[in-house]
Every structure is written in structure tokens, then in C-alpha cells.
Image (cartoon, rainbow, N blue to C red):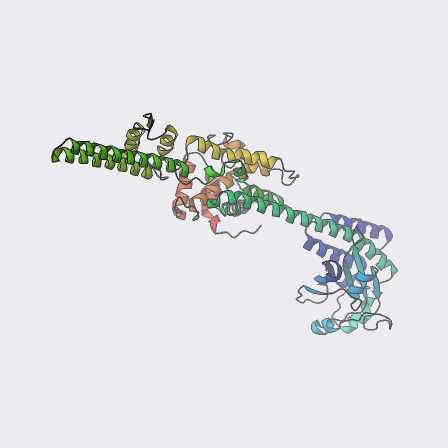
Length: 514
């Protein structure tokens, strides 16, 4: 290979390595290009794991043009007893013309068991360190059997005798140049991977923080993310219909996963007592109502006993005493009925007409305190909560819950997502919009809602219906949940084609692959 061709190859190798961010694929590229530039038949890569005295070498991968075999990762100590370990310790290349005839002063040996196990013959070997920009040894490249003819196969010992030559100075120089770039690329890829893991840890911690404030929805964010990404992957493979040209790259799927995981992030800005409100009244409100009823009950009892004493003192008839007792019993019975209606109306179910009439009557009742001042038996705010027709939240509380979407967009917009993830805030912040423009918080028309958000909306509704961890409702069977999605389609709220694909592909049965 002439100098011009060699430089072109080196530039191409540099480009290939700098554009690969996945550590596993990068190592494969490094080994492949190292073998290509030196005409090596086979090779392996080891990486350094740990630090100081606990550091070890991990065998990561191997490549061989002449024989096929199964390999698995393993670790070994970093010591001068192995060629790879000695390369790490001394930070210098090691070139061996024939590994079966090592120099007498070599501290390392050659393990012949590999050759014996797979029927291969190792002859020449070149091992170079991968050194980072911070001058740390990240691993080693070990190349085996440089060939005269790069296309030759080394199947027999005669093939080895005829084709294999030592790695000369030129091959070593070329390999060192590749190794220098490989060290930088591997360090960058490792740092990129660490940053990705760090960020994923932040996302998981954020989801845990959200769900710790609202334990009733534990696992909801993860399930919505799995359903949404699963639907996106199905849509990506569509060959017909309005979404046949919709495609999602790996980065776009990751963006969608993060947006789905964090779609309820804004709940941090909602009062916890509203998030976990299971009944129409807060506990302290019901306690106050109970205390008032108890006060009224004791007052009625005291009034009855006082009246009875007076009747007895004035020589009232048995009939008068019975009438007084009957009046007292009727009053306490009515009080019990009123309180029972409060307890019944407090449940987050659809309010029956009879219960509403009792509440209206109760709202007009008053009692007199010990100073003779009248007070309503049911405060306006309490009556307003109890007369909720469905669910457990007042109009103001519903608005507060809905504000979590605005908080989600605002909080997520403060995070520097970078180019590949910059859509996370908008996707997450639009999952409660509806196609007919009646959604919240921005009442977007369907054309303005990101397709990712439309998919998330379907996943969010489906999981909310089928989740079995909600204490205030039973899980809805899948078929009924799908019917409810169909009703939402008819109402103009969610996308018909996405819902059709969701149902047809049974996305809830797809195992996550991201």
C-alpha cells in the first residue's frame, strides 16, 4: 500500500471511529480497521477495568478471517506474565515474529491452548496500547498473523508457513497511528456512554420522585413509555395508511422514551394532597363535619333531657313524655340520615339524584353554638365538594391537576437537551391536547399536535384505564379499554389511524426493545 493510499485509509479510519458512539460497535470498528491496515488475519481487543491494584484486563472481542469459533468475555490480571498485560504495564508496543519462539528474556509466555482448541496456528503478533488523551491506558489491540496476501486463508500449517510474515516497522507505525485515534475515540465513546447512563439515572430518579408524591400511579410513567415507544416502532414499519412514511431513528425513539417517562414531571408543581385525593372531602374536612354532627347530637340529647326533667317536674303525662322522646328520636334519626348521606356522597362515584336532594336539604340546615350564634351544618366549600357528580375533584382541583402539563413543559424546557433530544418538552407537554382543539393546556388543533404526543395520549389513556394499582377504581378489561379509545376517536379526541394500529398490533403485548 503506497503512502497516499495509506493516508487515505487512515483518514477514512479516523472518520469511521469518530462517528461511532456505541462502545461495543466502536471496539469492533477499531479491531477491523487495525487488521485491515496491517493485513492481519486475526486479532483481539482487551480493555482495562477498574483502577489501581484492582484493575483487570477484560477480553472483549476477537475477529478471525480463517476460522470460526465461539468466544466469550473473560478477565485476567494485569501482569507481565501475559503479553497483553505487559503491554499495559510498559505502555509500549510488543512485536513478536513467532510466539512459539519467544526471546529468552521475555517475562511473558504464550498460551497455546487457544490454537490447540480451535485448530489455528498463531505465528506473528503485534500488541499496542490504547492510550487516552489523559495518558491513561484504556486497553490493548492484539493482532495476529500478518499476511503477504490480505485475502489468503490460513487453514493449514502450510498456509501459515507460506503466507505469514512478521509485523515490520511500517505496520507498527500504521497500527500506532490507528491506536492513537482509537484511544481518543474510545475515551470519547466511554464518556458519552457515562453521560448517557448518568442522564438515564436522572430520568429514573425524576420518575421515582414524581411517583413518590403520587404512589397511586406507581409504574404508570414506565408503562406509558413502553406503550408509546412500542406503538412508534409498529408505526415505523407501516407500509400503508397515512403513517406509512413515518420513520423514527434510534435518537428519535430515545427522545420519545424520555418524553413519555417524564410526561407527568409537572406533578411536582401540584399540591400533594390534591394528587392523592381519593375522596371528595379531605380527611380534615370530614373530621370537622363529624365533629359538628357530634356537637348537634349532644345538644339534642341535652335539650331532650332538660325538657324531660321539666315535664316530670310539672307532672306531665306519660303521653307528653312519650311525645318528647319520639321527637328526640326522630331528630337524631334525621341527623344520622344526613351524616350517612355525607359519607355516601363523599365516595368518588357518580352522585345519585336522591343523594343530591339530601345534600341540598342538609346545606340549608343550621345549628346554634354555645354563644347562641347560628352556623351552617355544612360549609359552602364542603357542599361544593360533595356535590361533585363524578370523581373526587372540584373544578379548581381539576384545574390544578391539569396545570401539571404546563409545569411539565416549563420544567423540561429548562434542561439543555441538545439537538437529538430537543423535542422532549414539546412532546411531553402536548399529551393532553385533543384533535378537536378542546384539550389542554393550549387547545391545539390536531394538525399542530406532534405525532409523538398523539401516540402518547393513546398510551396514557389505555394505561390509566387498565392499571390495577389505582385504589379508587378497578382495572378496566382490555377490550373495554379499547372500546373507550374508540369512543374517544368518535368524539374527535384521539387519532383514529394510530388507535387502529395500536389495537391491531396489540401494542400492550409488545416487549420493550429500546
